[in-house]
Length: 113
Length: 109
Image (cartoon, rainbow over all chains, first blue to last red; front, side):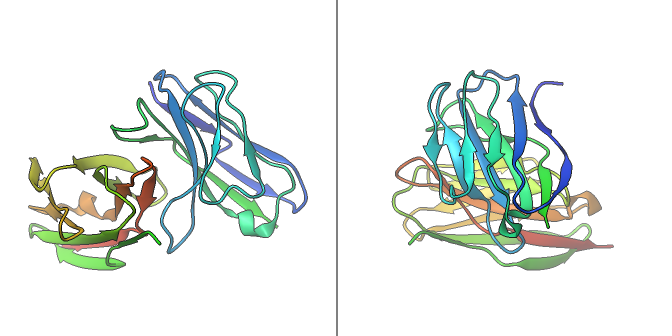
């Protein structure tokens, strides 16, 4: 089934550990995004990439990094996890940055203890 | 600052009609989206409005008034499966999406 695949689905992590959330899409979309979703708040953009080889900072980028080596993959790395990074993380993609809807992965639930 | 306001929670009866409102204050406007998100799942696209007026798609309709910074999502003939959160998002002048916190819709038999 075409779409976006995220891994892991769920993870419990000790504070201070490094963690990479993986995201792969097979729709050949140019733009990809990482959001976090917390109770009572709207989706907040962490980082984005408008095309392979480029990345940009979103609303809440601190403590996170991304890379976009090719069109399909957009991993999100937490260099040293902290409890405030406990959240549900969604990867999304869109064909264009100016129009069109976002397609979301199923999410990665991360708990930092 | 930029802001999207939606009611936190609404309750409606199966078979009825419900209207979920969204007001926004953003730096520029390049379209408004509605997404549906069932508990524990990913958001899925419902509708897109960029011009004033009503867009109808089956049981769901979405309305936009750019001058008032206002949109609503209208759900008709409610079904139990419509129990979900409904997210309003506005694309601003930089083409970034600003998201509301979502409206949790509870459908009762």
